[in-house]
Image (cartoon, rainbow, N blue to C red; front, side, top):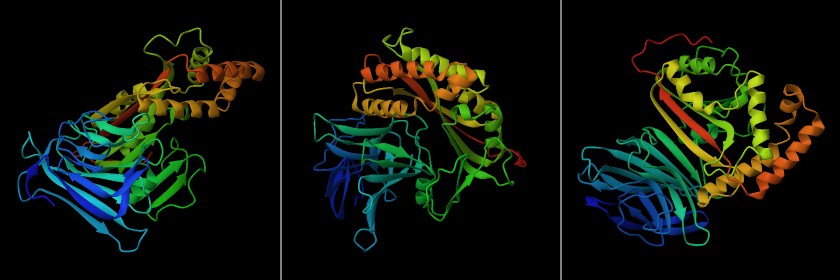
Amino acid sequence: MFETGDEEFTFVVLPFSIGVFGTFDTNVYVSVNGRLSLYGANYAHTNYQLPDTYLPSVSMLAYYDDLNLTSSNHIVAYQVLGSVSGSRNVTFEWVTEHWQFRNQVYHFTATFEEAQPGIVTYRYYTISDKGRSATVGAQNLLRRNQPKFTQYTFDTPNSVRDRTFVRLNTTGAGSFTTGAVEMADVFPNAEIIGNDLSAIQPSWVPPNVKFEIDDVESSWVGTKKFDYIFVRHMLVAIADWPKLVKNVYKHLDPGGWAEFQDLNSEYYSDDGTYTEEHATRKWNKQFVDACEAMGRTGCPGLKLQDWVKDAGFQRITHQRFKCPVGPWARDPHHREVGMLNLIQTLDGLEAFSLKLFCDVLGKTKEEVLVMLTKVRSEVKSNTFHAMFDHHVVYGQKPEDIEDEQADE
């Protein structure tokens, strides 16, 4: 498409529509700067947080930065694969360098499937600055009173790593997924194993995915080593976190990566609206205390980095995300996150409170139900600005370490 250029874009017509947040078109404007737009284009090259009114209203940002084509090795191109209507896909590919930092390579793609409109997969092969000065996400600002956008990263060091992918679903509020099934689709030559203590696995999975029902704290069967291990939302399920993290380390091949995502379930507010007088505060504190009393932690997120470091990992990154409880936030993204958290809290409040409060704290069922009635009323009232923290920590097992037997 391009030979050389900076801040350039071109116009292509696809055989099927692609889109974001309910807006679709076959006409696509492709920018050198790592973005795709519908209904127009411009020469903007300075990335901002989303929503970004300097960009076209409907834009998908695979790796939006001030990129440049300066040699015959650099390209921006696209390819449509498949000939049967309904099963085609299109991939846009960028191989560029940064306008300011020469000799750095930025090689990434964006793939859309005709059968899954509103879903795009960004794949990253070589990203020299690992997300340090880029925006990744999507936005639809056509309806000014109800803008839709979702942002995976903005100027965050080490947020975009080589040989990784981000799958963005804009059919609803906007979400990013990197689970077992999604990873299998992106890496068809890899073997993906999912593990859970309960039989909650989907009935249909790709051929390179299998699920196992097992206790992750028991001995891991076999001596298999992995390139990547992902642990998410184990919270009070784990009795010995340091042992688990060390076991994950042992089961990685040298050079392999592990990622841990978990919460600090203790609510707080930045503006003082959430106080000791609230029934929600009292319930939340007792929930955390009950977890500790039974030898588990309800707040593993903040400790993840230390556990990962103590296990021997290197190149560790720790990210913290504020998660509102209720739709009180001003910006649309956090307002939608808050609504989702409110729904989850209301749906699960009784289930994850009764056993802890009755069996561990010695309360009667009637006492707990009265407390939960007050909590439901408060969290739905939107009168305080409670939130909790979600922590993401990932690190690499050193490549030059002597391999050890994975026998735990």
